[in-house]
Amino acid sequence: MLCKFANFFVEINPLYDYTKDMIKFFETDETPTSDVIKVGDKFTVDDYKKYISLHPEVPIYETEYVYLSFDFFEKILKYNAIMVHSSAIKYNDKCYLFSADSGVGKSTHTALWHKVYGDKVQIINDDKPIIRLENNELVVYGSPFAGGTMKFQNDSAVLGAIVFLERSENNSIEELSPQKAMRYLFKETMRRIGKNKMNDSLNMINAILENCKFYKLKCNMDKSSAILSHDTIVKED
Image (cartoon, rainbow, N blue to C red; front, side, top):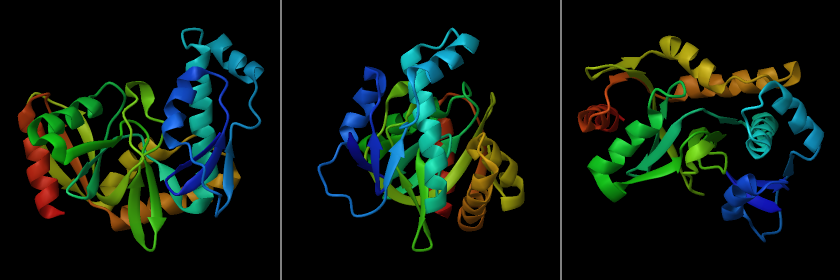
């Protein structure tokens, strides 16, 4: 199946309906005008079964989804693009990424933005949005790799800020220097990639560090946390 997202033409032919249901929203009949990225073309059912032998709690269809997302992640690095583990919203024509370890509440926080600000907020991708460096500008794109929530759009906007979340009873926010933000960004972007891809990954991380604002938000699950982050990152952006 030929798809198009993040201005990439992507050929992807999953075996299981779980991923098929996600990528169908990105299917295109356009004639490719650039390289076609072939995702998962070398994977077999046996590859998935080997993973499941170590993680029997993971269904084979989810295993395929994970394999395909990692394959895509690695193949886009050479095009000045990277996937960041985060929930990305579009607000006032800019994208804001909220990143945290699984279970901290990044999806919950972006849902609070939607409750407070309504249709002004759109979920671009709830797990693995793509950042591309285009014409010296960082642009965030949706992708079909959106975790279990399946919240995504084939949309894009210029990156406004990246916020790293930490669970807390009380809300507080601080701006981070690129030096302090570096360890958080590394954690949410680095994957097990070959040495030949490492330089591409580091170059993209450096571009984000040099061209983006970063914040650390300690937050609870109250609407006031969304208001605090909004009033800080949108006003200062």
